[in-house]
Amino acid sequence: MPKLDLDAIPQTNATGYPPPFDAAVAGRWYRRLAPPAGLTLMGASHCTLLPGAFSSQRHWHRSQDELVVVISGHAVLIDDHGETPVGPGDVLAFPAGEENGHHLHNRSDEPCVFVAVSAGAREDDSGVYSDIDMVFDAEGYARKDGTRYEAHRIP
Amino acid sequence: MPKLDLDAIPQTNATGYPPPFDAAVAGRWYRRLAPPAGLTLMGASHCTLLPGAFSSQRHWHRSQDELVVVISGHAVLIDDHGETPVGPGDVLAFPAGEENGHHLHNRSDEPCVFVAVSAGAREDDSGVYSDIDMVFDAEGYARKDGTRYEAHRIP
Image 1 (spheres, helix red, strand yellow):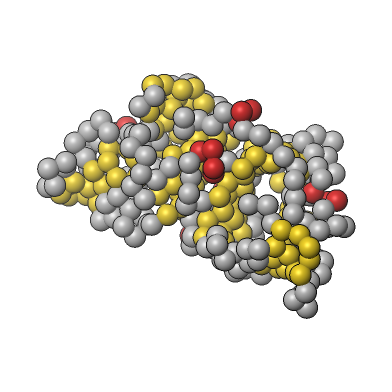
Image 2 (cartoon, each protein chain N blue to C red):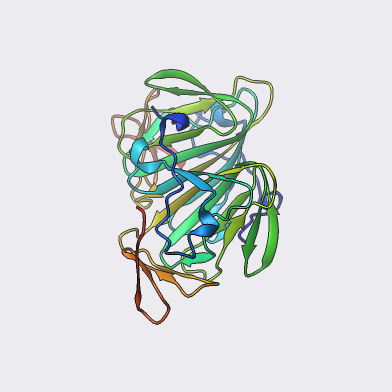
């Protein structure tokens, strides 16, 4: 069915981030939408960010466009421009290759719900975490000197 | 700026549909988001569907995934499964090549606002309108016998 039954799609807060970088996203509960919906040309996640949680470590992608549509609740977008409040109906766009690390932080006392969509080269997606000693590629995570973390990305 | 200033992006109700198929979308006011946001790997539109308006003629795409996130208001999704009410927070997904023509109809007395995202082959995108004598390709519109309409798609 084109209208997704969100309640029927399992929700998880799993992350591939190695410690201690995983703690910031423990309150990020998401559903991967593309597999149950049959989408193969984009990625999509429905995300509920609990109070205090971050959407990710601050990062940017080399070869994927990202778009976020905020459905409910409030969060703060943190990027190289500073801090920007976001709320219902706001749309955020992150072009592939733009080296502007970004994430969302829920500083409110209510959940913030959004949908994140990505498109572009998924097999060789890679990028950089702005604030920590970590980069990512299709396989997983490494320090900026190239040595690998013992951690794998969650598809 | 990653948070899009929606009010600063021009809104239009232009359509390339030839008459009489254009009338159904006269109340569909949209902003193309990808060009001002710098996105090149996906298409995205912010759409306000006025009461009575359709989102498009009922159609499907051969080579583009589509995802719709409803922000506010209510509409009815019409597809081969029948009619399905949709409202704030609903997510609709239309996989490339799935021959299930779909559109939204605002039967309420308030605007319905949604974001539609597409990904896939854009240069040779093509598809079929389910209920009328029309197909589309990258150039424009034709009847199902192949003769062209004097009309061009709006990028």
